[in-house]
Amino acid sequence: MKLRCKFVVALATFIAAHLGAETAVAPPKLAIISQQSGPAVGDLLFAKLSASGGIALIERDQFARIVKEFELSSFARKSNVRAGQLASADVLLFVETEKKLLHLRMVETHHGERVFDAVFDSAKPDFPAIIETTKAHLATLARKLRTPPDERLYVALAPIATFHQTHAFTEALATLSTLIGVRLSQDDRVIVVERDDLASVVAEKELNATAEDSLSTADGLVRGRVAEGNAAQLSLEFRVLHAHGSKAATFHVKVERTKLGEGAAMVAVKIG
Figure 1: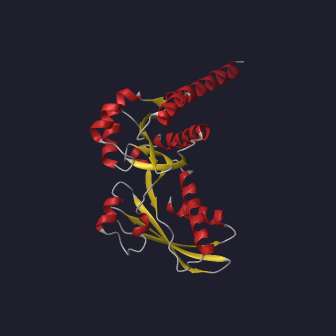
Figure 2: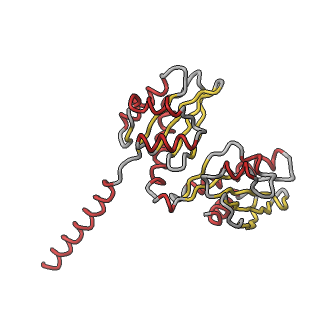
Figure 3: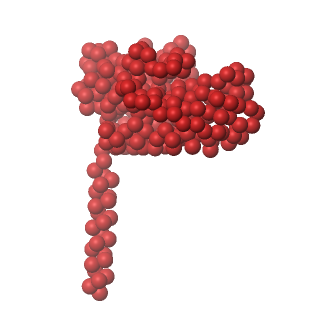
């Protein structure tokens, strides 16, 4: 009987400790910045996310002065880091319109990195899809932000270069790049960052000054190329270039074109 009581007490203590650890993890603090001419999407997004729970939202009036002072945008990394520090925001969500497209761009404020860019029709926004997409990406980022900053790995993926310019080859490599990013994102230590200028870096033998500055907040750039390829198999070389002068790491993999998912998993393991 005494052994049973001790077991029950020990089990209760274990459960209480783990439940306490889980409840002690605060949700990430999110600030929404609407760069539209009208506030409709930003206001609705704020209201819907507030109602859904599990997200700590910073009041838009409270954040308005910081937005005006720093002229924030999803591309201004240093300003986004400073704004996050001032407002105690972990994540900034920019609602931006470009021509007929509505962009939702999420930025984490430790490095000021843009971590996703979802695109919708600005004329007829699909609000349920916008809400669900935002919540899904925020949940993923929240897990990563629980990893201590010095243990996170910020990775920029460049397009895979090829000497074959056929549509089939280009499509296969684009799919492989996407799958590598997805696989890396499944690791809570890894944050795959958005870079608009990575294509211009692919042809460089080493990182030039401009590229290095672009990667200053990333731990490295992953650059791949097709060494050999045919209808059935791709022989690929990948180089992990570090932004701060460390020696580049090189590895080779062979990927069957009918098994791109398996190939992406192999590459992700070597990078991570």
